[in-house]
Length: 129
Image (cartoon, rainbow, N blue to C red):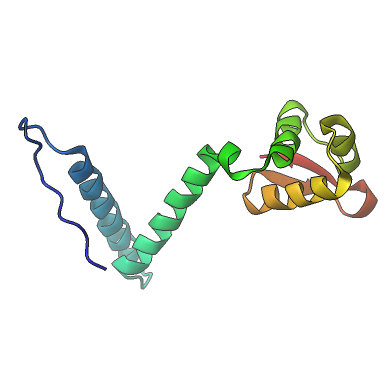
């Protein structure tokens, strides 16, 4: 995969912000890989780049959760923002969303690491992270 060429300077003589971001990313990857190798971990810069890329993706997901959820899923998420913890039944009643939809929304929020499950079975509760 070839990277596109980015100019160092803009037409007004200032440093290009895109260039600076790429430089910061490269520095992060190289220094992290070096530190890990000094600690005795066998890792390549490519592997570090994949890890850094996935954490940046996760950061973007957490900032834009409203864009990732449907209207009903968002109602579940918003209700969980208002309370410390709740059962799926409570959420369904208060958010006015069908119970199967609540379960599906909670599973999605679990995958996005926005909520955690507390307990098992009939006593299962959820709370936001």
